Image (cartoon, rainbow, N blue to C red; front, side):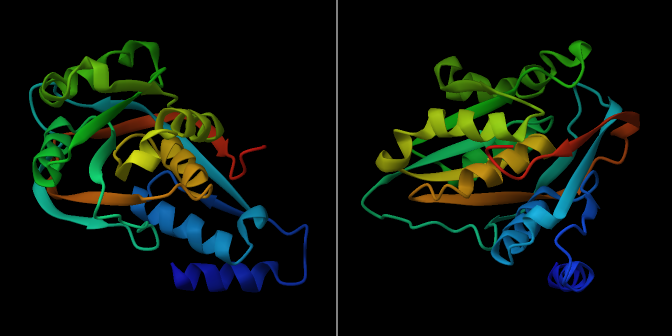
Length: 231
């Protein structure tokens, strides 16, 4: 990522109008967060345009996992907040299609409270309810009262929704947030993080291996993802 930043600096040096287009469609979510953070620190975000192309469909089986096991749970570099040992822990999970992985995260962290964020609306109407179906186990354990719905596509709206949802929790808990949802939600998470919420860290749970039988196919809509709240 440092090499990417250096190349962007070189290409944009001396030109305010020069734009670099970055396609994040296949980037890992925690890599996206680090890239945004480093670009922001170098004052290069405004010189970049980010594209994301949705899949047309996911080849899935509601009765088989998309990944197996947990290789590692770690704080995402550059996103470790102030941890207050006098406060209890709130785990916030952006849910996707990996219910077993989300469940493993809950079991390993063992937080005082857990909040589940479900994307709504889904990319396609026929996908509505799929996230809930693939995360039934963790939803049953955490309870419907700890479920919040959050936009799937609009990073600015995601950031504003997160701020509203977590406004009271940030002062009460140490918040651990895990980005397991959509790529646009990951951008929204960064926009929220950039507002400097207290006692908040971002964590990632890397799977041991993915289920090669399930994958995305086809090309859906392409979006330009904003990197400013006021966009």
